[in-house]
Amino acid sequence: MRIVSLNANGIRSAARKGFFDWFDRQDADLLCLQETKARTHQLDDPVFTREGYHDCFHDARSKKGYSGVAIYSRRKPDAVLTELGREDFDCEGRYIEARFGRLSIVSLYFPSGSSGEERQQYKFRIMDWFAPVLASWLASGRDYVVCGDWNIVRGELDIKNWKSNQKNSGCLPEERAWMNDLVEAHGWVDTFRSLKPDAVEYTWWSNRGRARQNNVGWRIDYQLATPSLRDRLRGCSIYRDEPFSDHAPYTVDYDA
Image 1 (cartoon, one colour):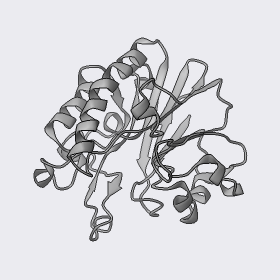
Image 2: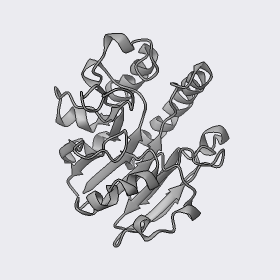
Image 3: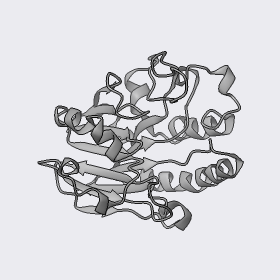
Image 4: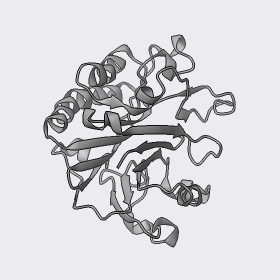
């Protein structure tokens, strides 16, 4: 089972840059997109309907051209969920879950706090609220893969400029402690770090300066899996040869 995840920073923009042509060559079973920045009715171009795939979207209701998540799957989902019961989160189009038997695939776009203190405080509130949601998924007996842009690095290996970013959103001590607690205390599997314990690779680069060219990046895109899937991990890769977005596609292979 191959799962590709990407924060597209606009699905229409990524398509114009050749993302779906690249995706067609990946032999992927699932694609999770974040930050689609489109309403579903705006995606009537055939490029957004991939042959052999079912697609489902959750658009932001709060504002146009904002957030939004999607899942493409070879197999038709048994069920698709888009609401977690918190309106200020659900209305921003940040979560979609596709269920296949006992397997759940989630595309998640976690809030960023980089725009200012108000959104940072919102991010902290969402962290407090979302931790029990994740705990309930762990306790459900289902296999989960939560794909997405979490907007948080875990540690020094995950960010180029470690010291200078200690006071910046995404690298704050409280955020890193929360993210690491999910993995180290609660058992969520950071698939990349499980497969590549010492690797230094990034999934996001600022559009400022020459960050991408100089590889001044952050690893903030994850596929977190339930412990039941740890032994089924076979490989992963971050594709950065073509800039479809300010993020790079992250691909993980699992035993079926």
